[in-house]
Amino acid sequence: MSRGRKPKKSSKKRSPGRPGSGQPRRAAGARAGATARDAPGSEPLRAEETPGWFLPAIDETLAGADVVLAADGPRALEEATSLLLGRQLRRAVDEDAVGWFDWWLVELVGGLAVRIRGELGRGGAGWEAPWRLLFGIASIAVPSLASRALAAARGLLADVVRAADQPGWLHEMAEIAATGEVWQMRDAYGTRLAVIAGFAYPETKDPSVFLFDVDACGDILVVNAGCYDEVSQAAAAWRSLAGESADGAQLRPVTSADELLCLVHADKDDLYLSGRESDSALDNWYRVMRRLVDLEVALAKRGMPLPARTSLFGGHDTAPTIAAFTAWSIDRHGQPPETAAVEALAGEWFDGCLPGAEQAASPHRVRYFQELMGDWVDGEVTTAAKALLPDWVRWNCERAGTPEHLAALSIAAAEAEPAPFDRSGSSCAS
Image (spheres, rainbow, N blue to C red):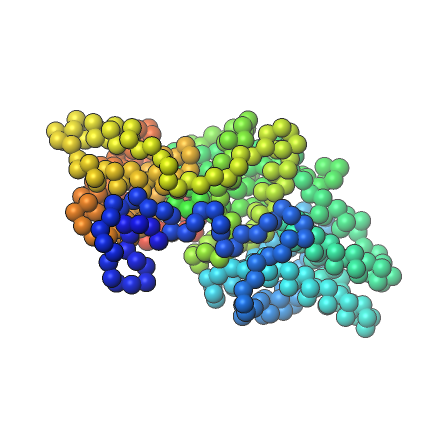
């Protein structure tokens, strides 16, 4: 909880403080759901009790695993695996609104191994789908989890070889790699970004591109994702997802790692899910995490390592912004705004903001900002700041050069009663 905001679980107000001057709602560094995902053998976090959705989700995955048998190559198996697992993550979010996804995958790998061993032992035919699923997991899970799937497969390999021949490409599944080619697009507001990266299996088999659709209006999130045949296809898909503000977005190659800060700062927690995540985000949950690792490795090999993740909260020099807005207000209204209110707006606006999006003011970001302001303690400063919000949004749109028809949507959102902030990956202009 931030200083100067209302307590979340109590109606008792805190003593007045300067709104917008506090810390983020949860620490930006030590995230409860984070794991050392790029370290093979690292342990996922666990709760004291196994979540109730784990066993039913494992049973349903085993029951539906035959879909992977239709895969005729690495990419097809990768896609089938992502969709199969994504359905169970949807179940988890709908039932509990909490993750533990890494932990569940460890349990699933164990369940697959048990099923394979049991079917082989009794001479049954039900081992092949879970066997292939182990390799599908190895292609979409981060190294610490992929290594578990591969270890399970190695322990069963001798028995499987005796049972039936298997495609040689199965053993290449874990070797998918980023090519190092990356493109980016940004919408007219500046808070919705597409990162499109090239990937291929060994000997350039099954080349593809992967789309990361990043929403930076509030918490920085990968709100949609997917695998596509080519860059233009991924770009068209992103424009459709991002909506009106992305209509004129141009595709351009990434030439500096700093252009990928949206991926560096993208939230990777699974314990703070809202329940409104898109099916695309959940279907690709594991694959997004793995492709981020793959991309980071490829860029480092090219001498373009991603920058270290640093906190986006606190330490901002808001004085120039406050001075510029004050001057604009005097020119527009003939008098300056209340200084404390402008300080509160600027302090909250900059906290958690993706570098380069400081002037971005989409309707979606406005709703996020209104949600934050709803937590401020009541008082004169809060009242004045809320009254200033439409002007603040108008000024930021002017500074950013936002097209008039899109700026009008943002100003209208600021003038309207606060609406729920949606994290579902829909258009930032609506």
